[in-house]
Amino acid sequence: MDLSKAIRTAVDTGKVSLGIDGSLKRALAADAKLIVVASNCPVERKADLQHYAKLSGVPCVDFVGTSVELGIVCGKPFPVSALSVIEEGNSDILSAGETA
Image 1 (cartoon, helix red, strand yellow):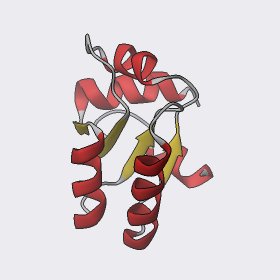
Image 2 (tube, helix red, strand yellow; image 1 turned 45 degrees about the vertical axis):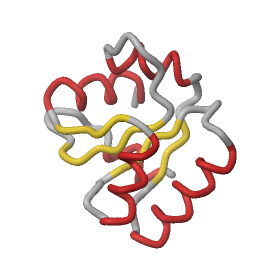
Image 3 (cartoon, helix red, strand yellow; image 1 turned 90 degrees about the vertical axis):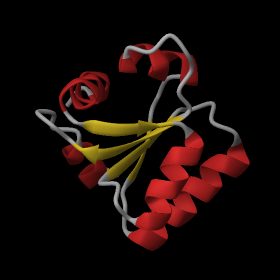
Protein backbone atom coordinates (compact mmCIF):
# COMPACT_ATOMS: atom_id res chain seq x y z
CA MET A 1 0.00 0.00 0.00
CA ASP A 2 1.22 3.47 -0.90
CA LEU A 3 0.79 5.56 2.25
CA SER A 4 1.09 8.87 0.38
CA LYS A 5 -1.72 7.96 -2.00
CA ALA A 6 -3.89 6.71 0.85
CA ILE A 7 -3.32 9.94 2.80
CA ARG A 8 -4.27 12.07 -0.21
CA THR A 9 -7.42 10.01 -0.81
CA ALA A 10 -8.39 10.32 2.86
CA VAL A 11 -7.87 14.10 2.76
CA ASP A 12 -9.93 14.41 -0.44
CA THR A 13 -12.79 12.00 0.34
CA GLY A 14 -12.79 11.57 4.11
CA LYS A 15 -12.38 13.73 7.19
CA VAL A 16 -8.96 14.51 8.66
CA SER A 17 -7.61 16.91 11.25
CA LEU A 18 -4.28 18.52 10.40
CA GLY A 19 -1.66 19.57 12.94
CA ILE A 20 -0.12 18.32 16.15
CA ASP A 21 -2.58 20.03 18.49
CA GLY A 22 -5.62 18.75 16.63
CA SER A 23 -4.17 15.26 16.51
CA LEU A 24 -3.43 15.35 20.24
CA LYS A 25 -7.05 16.33 20.96
CA ARG A 26 -8.31 13.56 18.69
CA ALA A 27 -6.02 11.03 20.39
CA LEU A 28 -7.17 12.13 23.85
CA ALA A 29 -10.82 11.92 22.82
CA ALA A 30 -10.19 8.60 21.01
CA ASP A 31 -12.26 9.75 18.03
CA ALA A 32 -9.44 9.33 15.51
CA LYS A 33 -9.07 6.06 13.63
CA LEU A 34 -5.40 6.64 12.77
CA ILE A 35 -2.67 9.21 13.42
CA VAL A 36 0.13 9.89 10.92
CA VAL A 37 3.29 11.66 12.14
CA ALA A 38 5.99 13.23 9.93
CA SER A 39 9.58 12.10 10.39
CA ASN A 40 10.76 15.54 11.55
CA CYS A 41 7.99 16.10 14.09
CA PRO A 42 9.55 17.43 17.33
CA VAL A 43 10.56 14.49 19.51
CA GLU A 44 8.62 15.60 22.61
CA ARG A 45 5.43 16.20 20.63
CA LYS A 46 5.80 12.90 18.78
CA ALA A 47 6.24 11.07 22.08
CA ASP A 48 3.09 12.75 23.44
CA LEU A 49 1.11 11.79 20.35
CA GLN A 50 2.28 8.19 20.49
CA HIS A 51 1.62 7.94 24.22
CA TYR A 52 -1.95 9.27 24.06
CA ALA A 53 -2.71 7.29 20.92
CA LYS A 54 -1.56 4.11 22.65
CA LEU A 55 -3.69 4.86 25.71
CA SER A 56 -6.72 5.44 23.49
CA GLY A 57 -6.05 2.46 21.26
CA VAL A 58 -5.52 4.61 18.16
CA PRO A 59 -2.83 3.34 15.74
CA CYS A 60 0.02 5.78 15.13
CA VAL A 61 1.99 5.55 11.85
CA ASP A 62 5.30 7.23 10.99
CA PHE A 63 5.39 9.04 7.65
CA VAL A 64 8.77 8.58 5.97
CA GLY A 65 8.93 12.17 4.68
CA THR A 66 9.23 15.54 6.39
CA SER A 67 6.38 17.80 7.45
CA VAL A 68 6.79 19.78 4.21
CA GLU A 69 6.42 16.57 2.20
CA LEU A 70 3.41 15.52 4.27
CA GLY A 71 1.85 18.93 3.61
CA ILE A 72 2.40 18.46 -0.13
CA VAL A 73 0.82 14.99 0.02
CA CYS A 74 -2.19 16.55 1.77
CA GLY A 75 -2.40 19.20 -0.95
CA LYS A 76 -1.64 22.04 1.46
CA PRO A 77 0.80 24.93 0.92
CA PHE A 78 2.19 24.58 4.44
CA PRO A 79 4.01 21.93 6.53
CA VAL A 80 1.92 19.31 8.31
CA SER A 81 3.70 17.60 11.22
CA ALA A 82 0.81 15.29 12.08
CA LEU A 83 -2.68 14.43 10.96
CA SER A 84 -5.45 12.35 12.40
CA VAL A 85 -7.90 10.41 10.26
CA ILE A 86 -11.45 10.71 11.55
CA GLU A 87 -13.21 9.20 8.53
CA GLU A 88 -11.15 7.36 5.92
CA GLY A 89 -13.48 8.08 2.97
CA ASN A 90 -12.54 6.01 -0.09
CA SER A 91 -8.98 5.36 1.06
CA ASP A 92 -7.46 2.18 2.45
CA ILE A 93 -5.38 4.13 4.96
CA LEU A 94 -6.62 2.16 7.95
CA SER A 95 -4.73 -0.88 6.69
CA ALA A 96 -1.54 1.13 7.38
CA GLY A 97 -2.51 1.24 11.04
CA GLU A 98 -2.86 -2.53 11.17
CA THR A 99 0.79 -2.95 10.22
CA ALA A 100 2.01 -0.35 12.73
